[in-house]
Every structure is written in C-alpha cells, then in structure tokens.
Image (cartoon, rainbow, N blue to C red; front, side):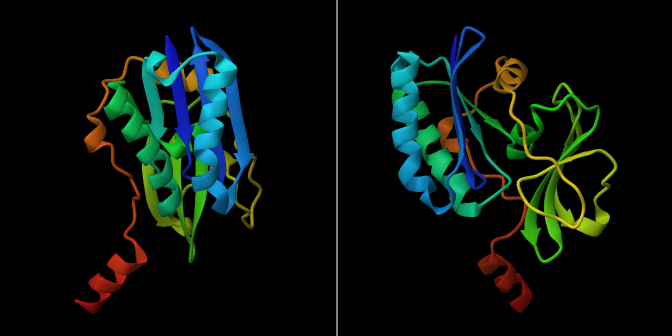
Length: 201
C-alpha cells in the first residue's frame, strides 16, 4: 500500500510517502509564505525519490486544519485535484494531530497561536485517539495540563512538533474516504471579513 501525506496548514510544509509500512520520503521544512510555490516541486521530488507515480497511490491523507487560512487551501487544492483526477481515496486529518504524532505521552496538547489571546487546540493520547476535539478558544479556557506542543512561542514552555508518519498512516488507513469535492477546510473560526459582518449586524 502506498500513501501520500500532505500538510500545508502551518508555516511548515510536510510531504511524506509511505510504502508497505515503510517511510520512504519525508520533507518537513519551514516554508512560510513560499508554501504555494514549494508544494508541487516537493511533491514531485517525493514521487521521484520513492520511485512511484501519482497514479500508484492507494490513499492521500491531507490536513484540513486548523491553521493558516491560505496554507490549508494550498494543500487541499493539491489533494482534491489528485484524488479526483486519479480516482485515489482521500482522507482528512487534523493538523494538530500531525503535530503531536511523534510523542508517546498520555496527553499531548497541540497548540497553534490564533492571535489576540486565542489558540487552536486539540488533545490526543499516545495512540492519537482524541481526548478533546480540536477547537478555537481563549487560551485562558484551555487546560494546559499535559505535553504542550507547538511551532509558536508562548509565555510557557512548549515542545517542538515531532512527527510519526507511520503512526498517522496506521491510525487512518482504514478510514472511510471522503468525496474529493467534500474535502473542505476546518478553520474552526470565522475569517476576519466574516467577523466584521457579524459584528455589524
């Protein structure tokens, strides 16, 4: 079985290929604003290094958020296009789950700074089972009792995200795929434009 993982929801571009339970390619580098221009060259390199073609894939795993509004759309556009055009099953996964996947603590809390005192937070155990669903909330209302993981800096200690792609694939390989046209971002919060519309009502 051949799997492609794509995550563009943070400032880090993650592209990985797993073949028969072996990690054969992993790209995990900070790209920031270059995400849209880097994602396709990196995916092309992934297939080249793995020695397979896109049509050989059995499944695509794509993060749907939370994270950067623009970043999420970059990866999902690629995943949806490949899944639809090549008829490859596609499964949505959480950005926060990917961030904590390499930790074996019993309570791993993935955090993304959403600004103005708010965060995206999700809590997972060592097997990536959900303890608390991903949410957008005030930092004051988030329990910080656990292994805190984030790319961002806070006034408290956090650990750098650590990936275990094999663990992610193992958890999701039997998931029911979604229709590529229904693979949508999970922003968890309104855009600034939407918030202004609501505040003006």
